[in-house]
Image 1 (cartoon, one colour):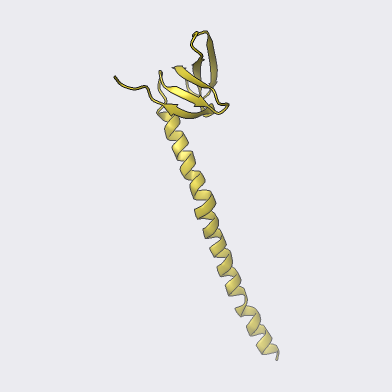
Image 2 (cartoon, rainbow, N blue to C red; image 1 turned 45 degrees about the vertical axis):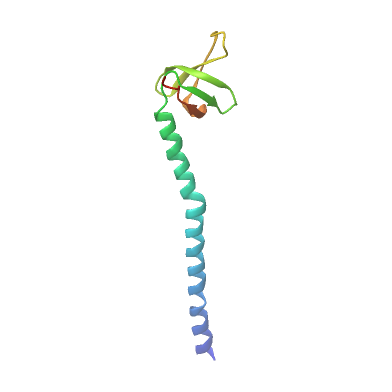
Length: 101
């Protein structure tokens, strides 16, 4: 009887390893990979940022980029041209390029 129990114990570990492998593959395709795609998209958005672009900040404000430095941009808010705020590039949520007319 001891031979049968040891054989059954070694066989039961294979399905557990397979299920763990499936779990890791599932986590990669549904959690890690989409996050990597989103990061690449955000980096491309920030790299294409140019003076004159209209931006939406993460706090919900719309403004126009008037200067770009390494990791900082200066955004002008409002129509009176008096509100210029420096902020980090990462605070940009969306960019709208000006229409070329």
